[in-house]
Image (cartoon, one colour):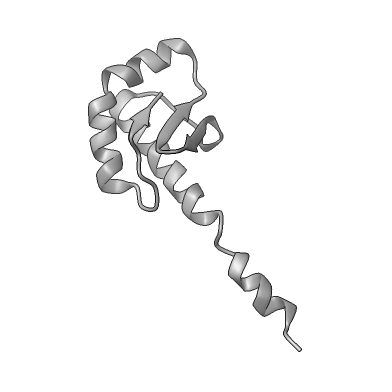
Length: 85
């Protein structure tokens, strides 16, 4: 009979890659734009990062969008980032 702990071990690291990638994205946006973005404010779906921040801060992110995407391409592991909105 199988041990339940060995079965649950498979699911231990499922959310860690996404969490680490969101933390990296948060750091990149903060450094490039001076906008503090918490991990809970970042959503990722189909290569698009959506930031749940005020419109005035989004305009700063839009201005630096090219630099943010280049850094995400280099630094974010486990996610392909095509766009920031």
